Length: 224
Image (cartoon, rainbow, N blue to C red; front, side, top):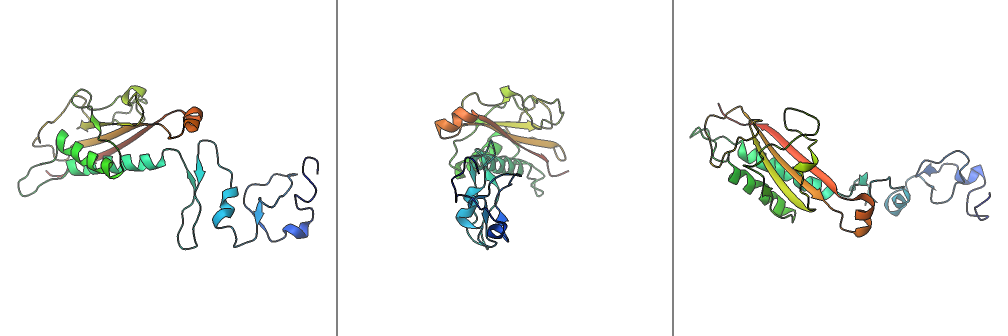
């Protein structure tokens, strides 16, 4: 076949009978050894032949039949998980209700930020920058009334690798609590963590630029 050295591809049906494809093989495409494999031998390095789609930087490799993960790795996956955990912990902490005293002892900027930053530190990320009281609920890009993503570009740090924290009380921009209030049971709390991510290598920065990441945990405050 033109463009392929003799012997570099399979030329008989019997040579590929029973094999499984590792990738999509188009009609008329020469079948070479890196495109197919015997059943049961596709673990480990065989998976490295899988094409990596645009926007991804790696492919996960199973390590055994008992343990392994599948799918593609996007440039910001680890950071995104860390931000999600941080937002969740901040919201969970802030909405906690002390039934014995009928109070919300952690429903304040400082307490919520502390919970967020502890989670960020566990992922080796710097503490967040609290945007309250100046901006409690970031501007949305699609007009939704619940301050859910997507957010306007101005809601994200202009400098890469920084975390901004918004604490949006009761879906009300401008409402802010420096100390725990009373009577907010069954009201809303949004803890919103945004980040401007820059890949570690200049090659990826040149290809993809920076990424805006956002995690919003929207909970109902406990209590009456």
